[in-house]
Amino acid sequence: MGTEKFSAVMGVLVEQIVHLITENYAYDEMSASNEFYGSKVYALLEQEETKLWHFSPLTLYNLFDEEKKTGGFELPEEA
Image (cartoon, rainbow, N blue to C red; front, side, top):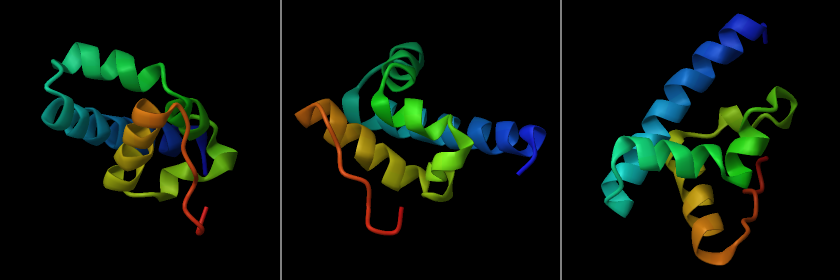
């Protein structure tokens, strides 16, 4: 995938994930963004070759939630 297309996909995904974080953690948008950008999930997501961007925003949110609650996460089988 080209850099421009990947950036567009990331923008849409991150926006949707941050929205889910604000709904489920009662964070404001800035706090939710900071939490997500500081996560291991985001670190893997921003690396195109990991193909995490194939997952739905809800799946990625659930990985973030698992990381937040346990300090880690397991990628789904189809990763």
